[in-house]
Image 1 (cartoon, rainbow, N blue to C red):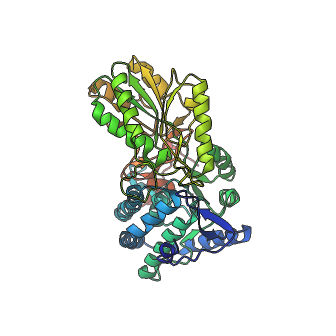
Image 2: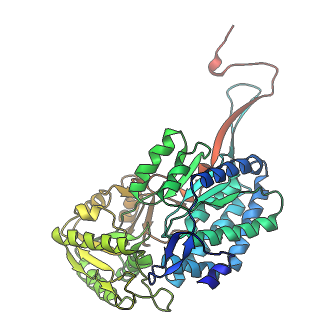
Image 3: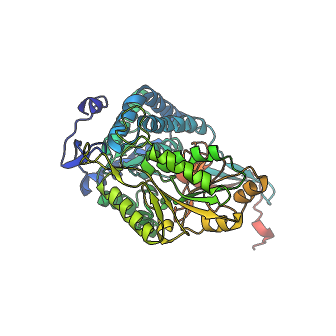
Length: 493
């Protein structure tokens, strides 16, 4: 581990112990920032904003381009660290760093496309326009399951939009954050003097550090990824000072499998979405509504596939399911399975594996739970590889059940019926921020806006016009005439 950290110039030191979910062993230690250190970093970010906002956006994009080059050159090393600290299999670790590279490419192009509008004025000799200005320092609070990609989604756009970034990573994955920050610092060194000090900073700490960022008026935008419970606590603090939030919270994502679905395709999508990252993605598939006419062959095949899934050390070739992040995640999974069984569920899988080899780590067999209905337990998100399966006879009933949960992140339908597909995507269809046809709910591309509705928080990150959340809108009217006509035809005096 020391060799991996040394590639990024990181020397572990401090009182907070960081453990790998792979074996439970200590990776290293870090020092948390106290209240005074956090205050100093916020003040430095506010100073950086004063100069960075005046750097032309295409020039700001050049810095992000250089950061993308650093990521390309260090992709394998950073992915290895993601695997060690978050427990992702090698392919998923590499995929996460590729997401960072992709958003850098997107942001570089965006730096020349921060478009405003020209609006027709009712007053002669006047021009009205809408333009966008940098908002100010942006706080990014990220979770363990995507320890670097979510920060990159936010920071690449924020930097291009003219905003400094203060990043509080999960206390479970601080080393990936320090490594990513080291690569950004290398890009800044190549970029030159236009980049102010403290353009990107990392704050290490627990809940108190996040609360400090949320409460500080010098930070106009707070982007937070985590549980719905976290969002309920954070959002009122930010809104009380009239700050803005970008919230990406819980997801209880579902798939509807219709009679016309290509079952082989559906099964592949189900397995990847339900067990990838050991079911610890915000877009993991958790609920499956299968039409009764295809339920037996699909569920039977899924059970056979689940029983043969390679579970183990994520660094080993062939492994598809790595560990849960910690004991609390395992205990939460087991509680949910007990509750589901009490509600009439039939469980296949879910047991702990490899306990003799890894007594301090938590590997599990992903679980399939056939439920008689969508119960209270099913409607509550459990961050673990549990797939609740329910049968339906009518598309309309499946759609109602699909939308009945409090979360609204990602959704999908498998069908070759055009009407069913279009109804799923219509205004009365899926109520989620992401709705797919014949692909699963996870593995989003950066070109589209990422986020969801209801208790998922309503925020959007990554592509499309998500950049607007990092800027402030200004409507301006210019009078180039010699008169002063008033709007609405008002005559005054």
